[in-house]
Length: 122
Length: 335
Image 1 (cartoon, rainbow over the protein chains, first blue to last red):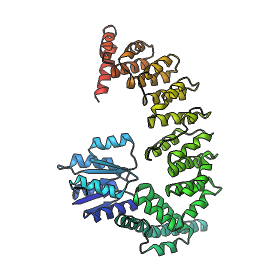
Image 2 (cartoon, rainbow over the protein chains, first blue to last red; image 1 turned 135 degrees about the horizontal axis):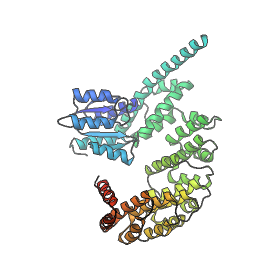
Image 3 (tube, one colour; image 1 turned 90 degrees about the vertical axis):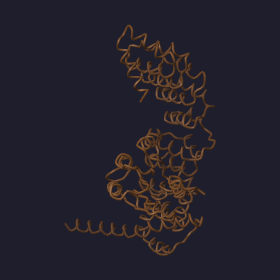
Image 4 (cartoon, rainbow over the protein chains, first blue to last red; image 1 turned 180 degrees about the vertical axis):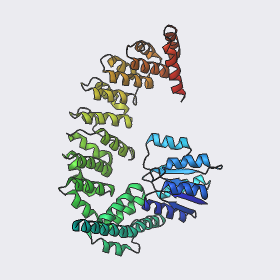
C-alpha cells in the first residue's frame, strides 16, 4: 500500500513518514501542494494524508482534485490545526474521508489509516 | 558598504548555522517520537543526544532547538508530546525560556510564556499567572492562554481580576483552547457575570453557551436587562444554546426595549428555539417598518412554526413582495 503524505512542516512530515513506514506502508513524503498534485496525477497512491495550509495548493484543493480527477478516487485523511466546524464541514463536503485535528497522536493516525484500508484494529 | 557586507555575511552565517542545527534536531525528534511509541518509554536518550547537548552550549543553537521543539509540540499530542517535553527538559532548555519570561522586553516575555506553557512547565504557573493582567496586550494574551494551557479550566481564575478588556480575538482563542481540554467543573461564572469589565461578562456568557451550563439560565436571563447592549446581545445568543420552555418568552418580553441590532439577534435566537406559541408575536413583527427586521421575523416564523408558511402566504395576497421573500427563504432552508 502506498501513502502520499503532504505536510509543510519538516518535523511532522518526517514523524508521519517514519510512523507509517513502521506499519509497513510505502510512503511518499512531499512538502507542498504542487508536488502532491504532481504525485497524485503521475503516480497515484492508495491513500492521501494532507495538511490544509501548504504552499502552492491547499489540502482542500488536493481533496477536490483527488475526488474529481481520478476515475477511481482514493481515500483522503485531512490533518490540520484548522479544526473549526466550517473547515471540517467543507473538507467532508469536498469528499475527505477523515479529519484529524492537530495536535494529533501518531498512533491515532496509524489506527485511522488501518481502518480506512479495512484492516482490523487490534 | 562595509556594514552591508558585514551584515549580509552575518546573516548568512546564522542561516547556515540554523540549517545545520535543524538537520540535527529534526530527525532526532522524529526518531525519539517513534522510539517512544514503540517502547512506551518517554525518557529516551538516542545516539546523538550528546552531540545535541554539546550544541546547546551556544545560545543561538538553543534558540533554534527550542523553536523546533515548540513547533513539534504544537502539532503532536499524547505520548509523542510527552517525549518532546522530556527532551526539552533533558537539554535544560526551560532555563532559557525562564530567562525570557523574566526579560524586560515584552516580546521576549511573551515568547518565554509560550515556550513554558507549550512544554507543560507547571512549576512556572505562578509567574505566568501574575502576567495575565500585564499592561502589554501581547504579554497579557500569551499569559492568559498559557495559564489555561498549563492548568486547564482552573486557570480561568484570572478573570476574577482582569481589568483590561479581553479582545474578541483572545476570547475565541481561549474558547478554542478550552474546548480541546478535558471538561472539568469550573467555578466563578456567577462572579464573572457581575464583573465591572464588560468583556469578562461577555466571555462568561460565551463560556455558558459553549459548555452548556443550563444551571446558569436564570443568570443569563438577568443579563437581558444589563445596561450594556453588547452584553445583552451575547445574553440573547447564549440563551439560544441553553434554552428551556420559558426562554423565548424572556426574549420576547425584552424585545421592544432592545436596540435594532439586538432585535435582529432576538429574532435569530427565536428562530432557533421558538415553538408554535410565539407565532403570533413573529407574525406581528413581520409588519415592522424595517425590511431587515421583517425578513428576520419571517425567517424565524418559517423555521420554528408549522403555520409560518401559511401566515406568509396570506400576507402575499395583499403584498406580492412576500411571495419573493417566501421563495428566497425556502430556497435558503433547502440549501
